[in-house]
Length: 155
Image (cartoon, rainbow, N blue to C red; front, side, top):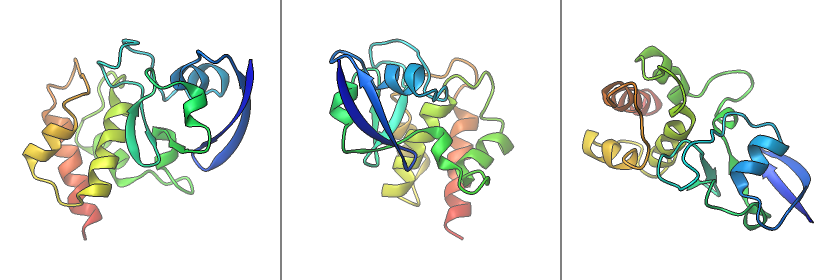
């Protein structure tokens, strides 16, 4: 076992992990971030996506020890001072949340996209979310929510 320090949603944590523990396992099982979903364990579904230093990462493929010294953001970390992020608000408003399983990963790739490109086209949004599987919405509501959030954030 090794001791590592993680910064998650702007809070520091010290946790003991085995060298083979994934970031997803540590975030979800050891630190209680249940917004990091456990999907395919193969990096295919995107449900465990978090931001690591602002970049989307499938946390089931990253070792927890690799995240030491990096800034990790989960979907929970998007809200500030009890107020939802515009992406979270628009996901609700546009009906982009159905079963909710893909939602945290979708939010994280959308956040990374809008940080890099605050005014994306629909094609750019679809490309950004292409690594995330949703079995409920058909993706249209998710695309609409991201486009609406971009418009609101650009006011």
